[in-house]
Length: 228
Image (cartoon, rainbow, N blue to C red; front, side, top):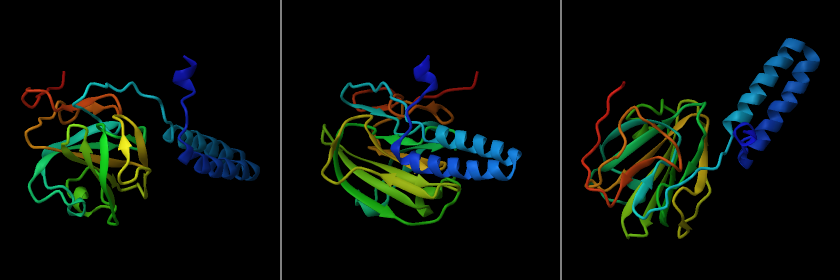
């Protein structure tokens, strides 16, 4: 029970928690109501940077959600040009994170990072389709252990102003391994070969490092779902 209450905090969050705490102390000295507002905001900041462990499926071929959030779109789309994957559309699965989701991102599958590319841009609402094209983003091209090319892209949103990516070109990563985060509210796109159907549906909530979004070994058709 204690583990569910005292969730680890990502190290990138401690400077912000310290700033919020300092402002809270000053605010409390000025006015008690302001101090309580500071306490609430500091608690939210701590909550935002939580970094819980996840139980990641380890079977070869499974593609796992890189982010907590709602599956916003599943559609064919051309990968970002800066990672040089050609102009043919791939199967893109977009997961939108709101400000209350865990924002630590995880690698969707095991493999080797073959190319990283950062591109500055706008800060449109990340739930919009055009955010993939115009917003600030960090793109990652990967070669899986099965020698399949995929990509995943961190996209800044309306509130997000900082993309943090901690992996390097040539690095070998495991499925579900932490690789970065985005502050505050954002989206992650995953680009898969067109013949690999999504095993999630639009509107479904995904959990980073745990939810299977595709399977290179599956023969299932794309899934449908309805609200019940």
